[in-house]
Image 1 (cartoon, one colour):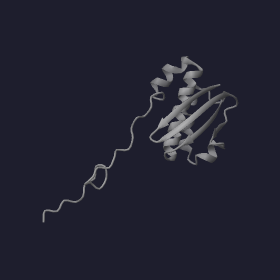
Image 2: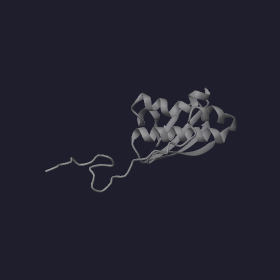
Image 3: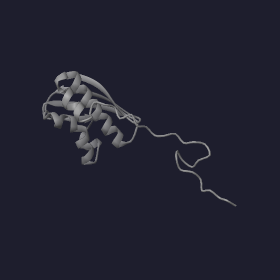
Image 4: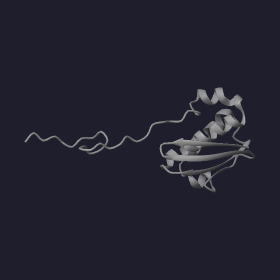
Length: 126
């Protein structure tokens, strides 16, 4: 059993991996019921698929904040970090696939006197 925290934007995932049959539960729901898109299923299982151990561990996660894609990436980050805690030998493979490093990009703040963070109001000469 191993525990880790994964983050992406405003999403925070607490992830436990336990020896088992490969089932994935997120916020007490099955993966397919929590995330509708197949691409998100792939993102969540990506660290396990790279190591070819997807059927050896159960994943239990609780996720808060962010959107659905951010939550999927946060769970993936948490799974990768939990796998590192479970076995340090996974580190070179996970690191080479950029699964261990947190994606630090966040939303840029809106500036005063502008429409958005970078968009400006239309300039009028007269």
